[in-house]
Image 1 (tube, helix red, strand yellow):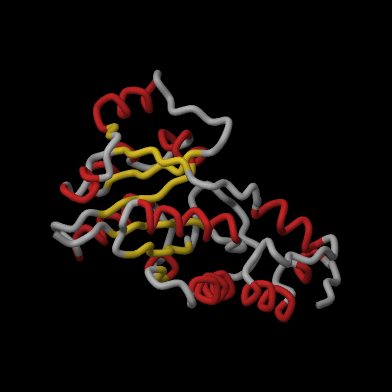
Image 2 (cartoon, helix red, strand yellow; image 1 turned 30 degrees about the vertical axis):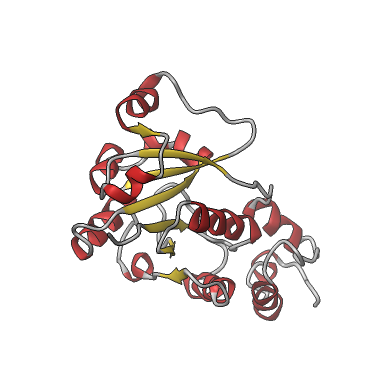
Length: 220
């Protein structure tokens, strides 16, 4: 039996150590074959991107290059139009018809799931793994409460034995790093050292991909 593939999507504007630590813990603790980072091309819930798609992809590649089991998939950036997760999962399901696929989400993203395009179809295509954040509780009522009753599991084994259809909640070490606050820091002339990998910091400093858009002047 082949181990599951973890799918970690996001704008990654920029990718930071909070993303990487969550992905690393899920990779090891869930015994995933890999965590595949999928930078979003044109997200449906966000009007403005700050770094260009090319730079965001470059930063993600730089961030994961030294970690075995971390890979980058640029299919959403190559796709025209809005990037819907259900379309990405359908695409991957065609490539891996029998393989377990695990969509990795933070708890805040999970709580917003009913606003996603065709969100109920996600569980026909993949499992959903929710990285638990302190202060958040798994819903027990409403649409998410209903799907937790029908699809929730407390065992990793089901993620390996079935290709899709389960929701698994996992506590992870939470590094409280916000991409929004990180951009604000950089625009204000602050140094993102220790918040992003050194290779990502170098790209931010060399290209001024955030500072230039807002008239700030960040020095190495």
